[in-house]
Length: 414
Image (cartoon, rainbow, N blue to C red):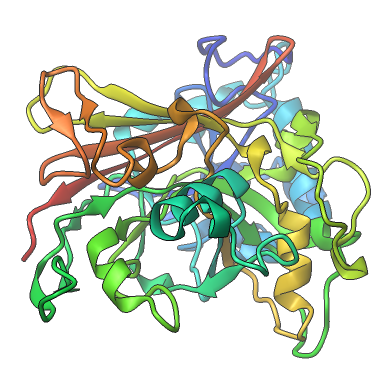
């Protein structure tokens, strides 16, 4: 553990070993880059103005931008230099920043966190075997739970980037067509089966040209960092519309991400092996080393005006069958180009037991097993006024690296 002259709780998500990047503003300060340290935000624009970062030989103007894209585009060597500088400058015993601490350090509680990245494109994968199996059993039975292609490639679809919002931005219940009775024509109205999906997303920090591919060996060179991701779903709209082209209105009414982007450098100590893949995958999807991460994930529901939250899921990123390197290799194998700021999401992360399922569809098993809330009510899906909170963190040998939370309230349909 590194000690800092900035005092913070030892159980914080944001110790000196983490230093995630985000975008914030205040009533007096415009959008700019911040770095989380304990309960504080390091104002990187103010820090650059001190002149103490001039020797890094990077474009300090990236800290005054509305999004992290220019910072990510500097490349990993540059962002690693920034992290090293911060870990030195804020280390216990270093007093170089003490004269500037009042202008450089702001309380997180006193700033507004903004969408960290301009997301040009968004792809959502379907990479948890447990989730895919559960959904398959519900709709096709045990014998046909996994589709024939599922263990041969990371299934994915192209989603809607414009409706991805940051934690704290609330979403309205969507409207659309549903077919509640298979013997009657479809009807129009608001969704009665709004659901969360517990996911994680990763952000692209290096572009490719059209026609180029990225191997599993080099995929991590293109991944800047990770966020918590809630892929909101309207199950009844989705069920009626998805044949034959897949998700559309049941998904694109909104997705939510956490405000802080945790770099892959911070997550390095938490690499673990993923599930054994059988049958053997094609050569372009084969990889060496540990590509999954031991990230504890939990989902809580807070009913409107309730004094308590209820934990409904405790899962882990390590359960994913298809890892990020494989997802990226498959995404580019046809020559599809990557842009800085592209978002890739994991798909629902479910574990092997009911308490680790990553969606209400599974937890309440298509509405047949309602979940009891702490306030005495029950849930089959998400109701108007419910707030869903996803948290994530890694922990090992006294070191905790966290993502904060992604928190969203479902409002009535407009």
